[in-house]
Image 1 (cartoon, one colour):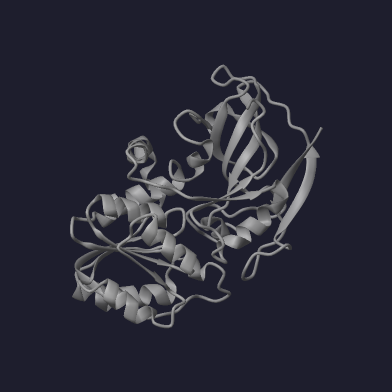
Image 2: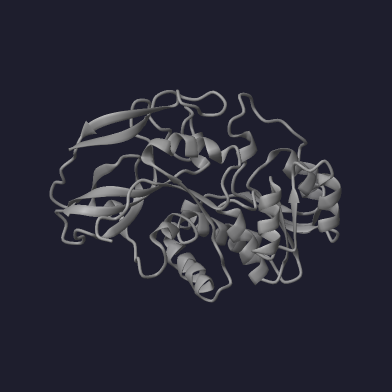
Length: 337
């Protein structure tokens, strides 16, 4: 048998395309002692991965040219030389974009298939869910009756942020990029309002939806959208900065209005964060998210692209807004189903 992996072929300028990725056939790996052979079932494509395709200093090392791209993966153990895992176990970890790979037993964690569909360990019960939970609750600290605005509100993180804010009793306003997403946020997730940023009347509708100002702004997008939200900040507003996807593919540095004066006037807190800052508290966050799910207070949505060969297309789709909720690539079915 032969294996296949996806490597970074070149560093993209602007939006990644077919020249960015390379499919490479490799030999089937064999596990050594304390290792397991993992068959990929699902892999995650995430906006932060675009930053790792650039050279230069960042909070995580860039991907290397001609080496496998890595990210969140759910897999099945098909061979084990570890006393902690057996054939058929479902595991998750930060692994390579490959159909099969060997990893040390310490590189993955078991997934409990009886708790929820296994795909949720890359979404609502994984990194995106934890990002939403800790960013909102630790930095945003929403209070009952406050107004919480979420950009990228129909994405994997944004839709969880909005629902948590609703659980806390906040007035929640989501910003997304299609009528389908707007309808979903309002009708399915019970957001108090949702606004299409492509709407010519976006500024007016944002003002109407935030008639009492903005107490918490969960930042996923940046750019012109955020410039408008910042104009509506209340005194002592909190801004957790999770991402700025609008600028990730820019060829030049993104320039816009300076926010310092608005932060000073409103005594507002703007704080960037990484979900890995909270790694020691992950069990706390996942337990709470799972509890809300079982109580029917928290819904999730997944957009699943079928086929390992379609991974580059799925990644490009992140920046075109094609996904509702968490975007995953389904590579294979478990062997023992």
